[in-house]
Length: 259
Image (tube, rainbow, N blue to C red):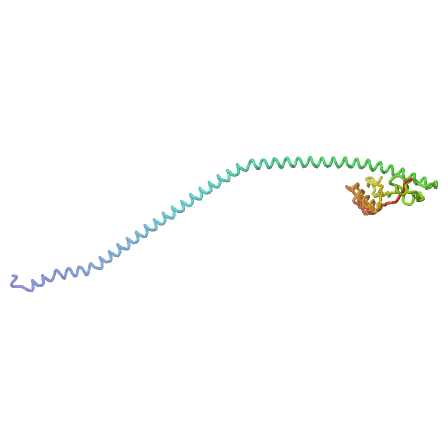
């Protein structure tokens, strides 16, 4: 049979390679598509795994940063508490010192007020005596003026121009004992409108230039005697200023000789 039909054998020998070729041609695209799909799935799985790893990494970093922030805040809180406990005694001590100082200042104010009140009372007594002496001196001068006799020149309140004239002494002893009497008697009504609120001063000077020296000194003494100034503020314009301010204007010096 084989010898009788060689074409059949040829056909049979060619059928297997053709079938394989046809199968390869038919299955090749399917195999390539399957391989591509597998590669795509593998890459997708790798990307998802990478994204999951990155997400876990970010979450871990955020958790670590949050933990560190909490630890830092707790440490700062403990530090503030320690500092507050350390400073609390100092604050209490400073508060106690402030309270003690305020108490001392109040006591000092009361003490100064009491001292000023005592000084005012003493000055009021001195002014009262001065006013009494002034009234007596003025009354003596008025009586002497009515009687035509020279008024007495003793005392700090003698009226200007009423001193009795004296003949200049020609004896050496009288000339040697001559001096200068300086006085300053500012005036401002006392509280209530009665008496003088100002303090008067009077002093005798001797030697060369006694008038100039005495005038400067009596002005200084007058200002010192009237500090603090007791002349009421609303009355100072009417009387040429306060007591101390008047000293330079009312100060006078007059030469005198020993009797």
